[in-house]
Image (cartoon, rainbow, N blue to C red; front, side, top):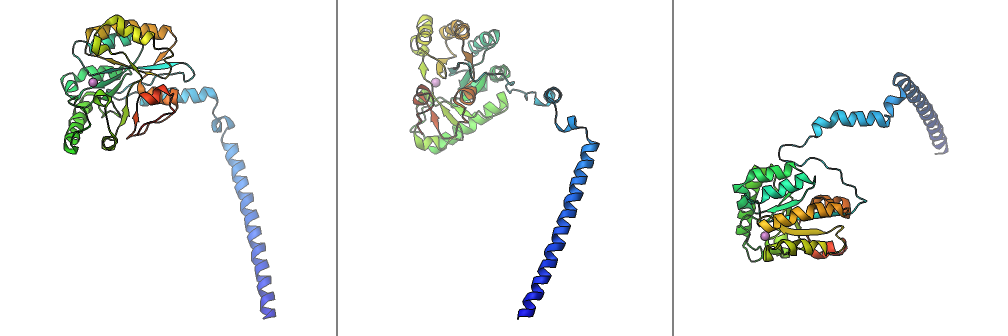
Length: 290
Ligand code: NI
């Protein structure tokens, strides 16, 4: 027993010694290889300077160009105040193009929660909006209030929306604003989308009065992080937008899309099956209904 143990110990020692030698040898080879690699490759190629990184970025730019119907990338300063203008119920063949003209003139963007059956009529309007950097959200196909609808009705609405939005902008929107802002939990779960409400209601649809709509926004206080609700189907809303867009910019707000607001102001990736509504925006992202 004792002799066997000793023999094993010797064998073990031999194995350890050989292993150590092998490790040291390998380590030497590896470090030599590294040395050779460093000799072959100039250090500046391993650690690109700011200039070469920029050059690489610029060279890669053509590949980063947006696909047809998709928004180009925009620079948003997360440290500066920002607000999201949203327009519901379009596209309107008459008024939506005027809102887009106003946004384009002011180098600004908005989010349009469009009704599917209107998108079917004016796909080119949403295509232009997306190309200007605006965001297109869904506002359902027929603008029927969601609570109370059967699963089949909802599935059919989703199918129709997918078809018209994909035709217009090449994709099904990730955002949805429920008609009248009304939704219940069981319905949230039936949509593979992010529900978005608003925090400043201009009531433009109710009064259709330019001054009233403008005042609602101008007297709403601090608008940083807020979502303003307007509609793209009234002449007075267009006129109000023509006053509000330059005014907001003058006040120092960046006009951003809703997705940009989530990313740059709230610093979040919004989740599907949740409703980011009044409470969320008014509490600066601390209150959440789901
Ligand atoms: Ni609506």
